[in-house]
Length: 383
Picture 1 (cartoon, one colour):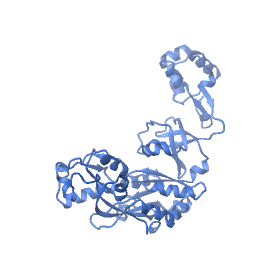
Picture 2 (cartoon, rainbow, N blue to C red):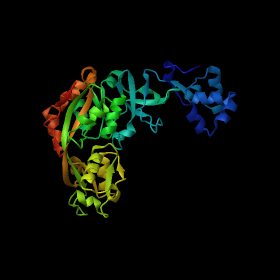
Picture 3 (cartoon, rainbow, N blue to C red):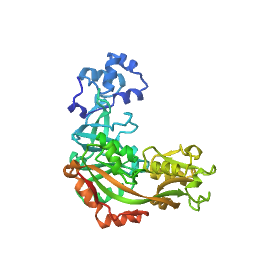
Picture 4 (tube, helix red, strand yellow):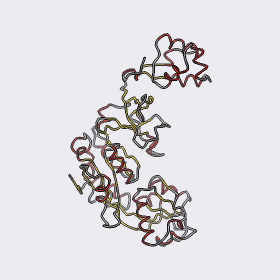
């Protein structure tokens, strides 16, 4: 019996039960009187057995049919897609969901970060892969589909987006925000692919000195978007408290005894570093730790706090979090890029944008240190 969308309401424990019994596919197939190919298809959710075969499998495994296959009564099962850049191998079944266009996008909770993995509740559990559909999975909802449709998926590197999400949650209603840590250029690409609703970016054009808009003209040419200021922050050198290496300025990154930790390609901090290295005529090869990559601003701070590096480029708020010394380099403008259609059609977007202009939210984000929220929620560009 081929697997249909309705039949995905069946939870399949065949493979787990077989492996727990220490049997190979060949062993179980022989005991149950079926082919190994048929068993493989059942374990891959490509085929559900009829009554006779299900009874034979249960007898061979010394269990009941109900222990092998059970109905998920009252719980919706949907088809969702993993992001386009996802390898397609899940280490966890817990996912956050968002509705983008006419499809559901599933983001593994564990990829939100170490701490959030244990504090953010999942929206659904992955049941298995959709046959012959790359990156497509069946998921079982843990919340209502209406709530999922009101979620906003924001890609970017500013951890304060989670604070904005909490303020949205306190408004009541179904609207919520899911922050997805990602470098600025990667966030733009994810927005272009349709994997997220919003891309948060801070990218300064070397030639013009203009923030963000030149990159939209390059990477989102032809797309109609609205650009909203999230905040402005100070970017600089993060140094362990007390500055034990006596770093006085950017030029000290060329010292062989100073180890740095970098950000990935496409991150605003990485672009700033490369720009300043060029300006100061410092080859990247002489910078100790230039190839050492932290996956996020908080991760960069943790790397320094644990003594694995002496310096990195990040936001003043991270320095305050870890009680670091801080040498300012420049002011960063962090903007949210939103397809204009979502501004008008997404059920939670208006609540999110209205939250940014509240003085309550602005006071709290400024209390993090290094943030200027006076323009938070201001429309920078609208098409």
